[in-house]
View: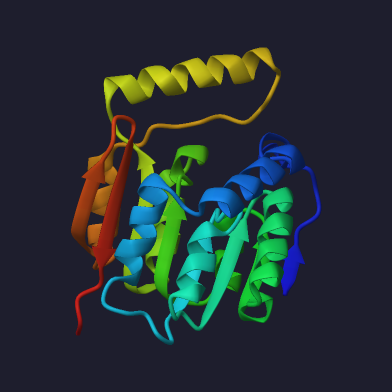
Length: 217
């Protein structure tokens, strides 16, 4: 199933059909790798039979495809790139679980009222693409019933230099898309305010993975 918002956004232009096709080929050849694989494993730890998934900015759908294969019952994928929605749906059909995924194209913050709670919420390399991190993390945190996982750039001098260089290239190419570094402490504070407790934190040179859980009542 799918629902698409009309209009050509900076996300559509940055994450276009060419990029989507490249990433789909890579996923089919290698599967999820690096911290994406670690995020999937952390969300699925202990078994997820019957769980529901909310995959925000899911790209080709690696997170929800793998979680569905691991026992999750259903998933919602919200992505601001219509090209990525298209290839994620194509891959869901290839894997035989398209009837268990609802695809929604557009800005998650604008569409959040249309999205129901899920047991597992994932944002894999998403908040670095969004200026209003507080709204994105806050709105998505309210929907997480069990676990909330995200991968995003480390708040480090190297990350800031990298993002500054990328944004300079984007300006030169006249793109309105921008990348962002958000402070880890601010992300943690928002999630803590929504009742989520950090259980796992892993880093690479540039990226970090954080997994949070909602304690049982």
